[in-house]
Length: 337
Image 1 (tube, rainbow, N blue to C red):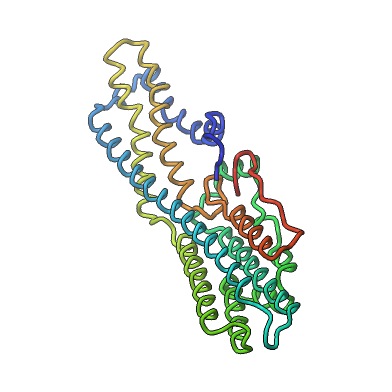
Image 2 (image 1 turned 180 degrees about the vertical axis):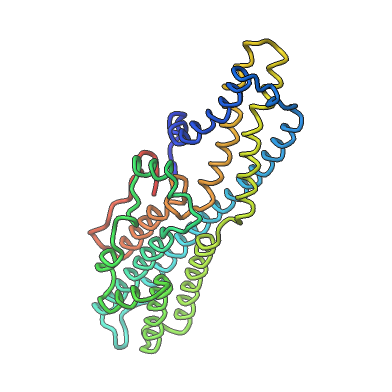
């Protein structure tokens, strides 16, 4: 997520430069053919092209609204995870107390285990959400280049098993890593331990139900995040938006040739810069929608799930009274990861 005042024009131009090269060819070739080869038949009336442009603007705007809704929902999901995690930490600290068969040292160890396991769940979830999908856009040259130059995604460079080692016992770590949905396995370990604590009389029935409800809330938010991750923005809308925008960009210089030919000979050359600017605007709208539709892939505009997970971890470790607390994750070139 970009946390600066805005993207600079230079950043935007560099990010879209490969499209700009193609766009320049699209507007220059028909202009050169018209002037030097006498292909005057290339000039088309502007009115039907403008109608296509109107349709392209509507469908691109519709797509951008829908992809922004996906991005905003992803941020709401992680906002709910932040709140539910803090509530979980308070419940662990308040409900798991010494008494019965549990000594003070054992109660403290149990609280630490429950909170560290929750941090492990956050870790597994962010690793799952960063796994690439075929429809995502990080494999595009411009996006991969921007990411390589400006920020690093730790889920792409770290090993999950190594990250989990300080947080889970070896048995728990093996159990979590052996599952197809590792985040769900981490939550199931929490539920299993709550049941054991209730059976041992450490937590009463009311506290047991309250903590199970909190686990259910966390699972619900996990499912919402997985829905966005695993269900792409419908491909038919992606395709028609791309087709309409590219069709309009391709026809624009032909309509401009017709318009500028009515003025004077030298103004025919204005087709190139004018067509380029119009095409760049429409292409930029298309690219922004594309870069927004998958908010967990690790793009520069995505929900910063790594940063938010670290924020939760710091809060929970401070509740435990730990001293070796990791530092917040700083933005890299105004990008929070």
